[in-house]
Image 1 (cartoon, rainbow, N blue to C red):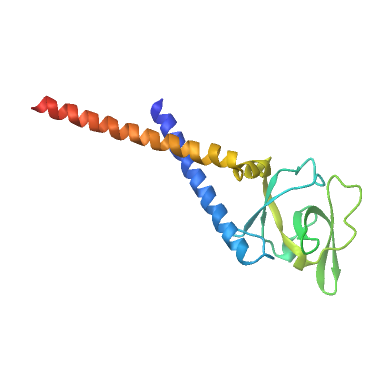
Image 2 (image 1 turned 135 degrees about the vertical axis):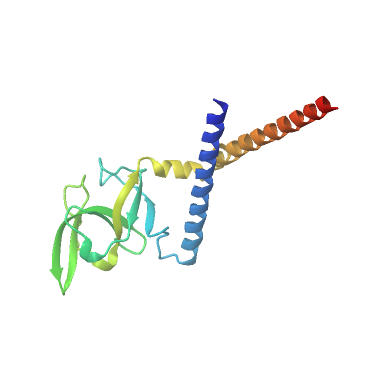
Length: 183
């Protein structure tokens, strides 16, 4: 049972280290260009702030968008687009129209009564929603707090260090008793 707990702890710690490393990489990349949404291997995590796509996507969920070519967008796809310089919107494509030789997209939030009004140009599209992590935004906000850091980083790290110290001391004790037994 102890081995299972230790293995589980090591796996969780490894996953946490990877998540922190990916967060740092995307944060550093985002600092370099304020207009660019941070991404890792073409995937862009974003936290949903409104209920316009409920019940499929709810406030507090994290969505992961994948870059997509404009010609690959279909009716029914959920896309994220730049509504203006500081606002992103994630809504469903309900129509595609050809204007000035390029596809333009009519979008609407699933929970909204009306469409978004303006057609979306291909240059505005950030990506297509690949999947969502329910309540992931709340978890990431908690992880960024002092209590989250203590609970998710310091305590697990301390427990793993304590387990390693116990293992080392146990091995030293075993070696010492074997030496005494050989004398």
